[in-house]
Image (cartoon, rainbow, N blue to C red):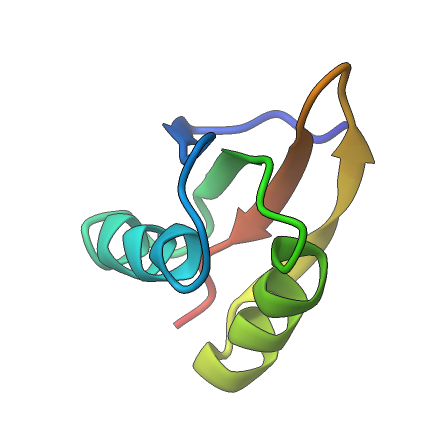
Length: 77
């Protein structure tokens, strides 16, 4: 996976909290930095790419870990 700037742990949080926390974290990051978000919410697999499209960030992909998923988002706006 791509190198990341910051990790956001949203494990245990349900929709819409993972995306809301990602939005808040991305606001404080510089353009080009990458947020690595950990989540176990089943809806995140749909919500995270949709959020990136709507907010104008680059969705770099998702990877499965043992008991959660890892999402990478590059701040572009």
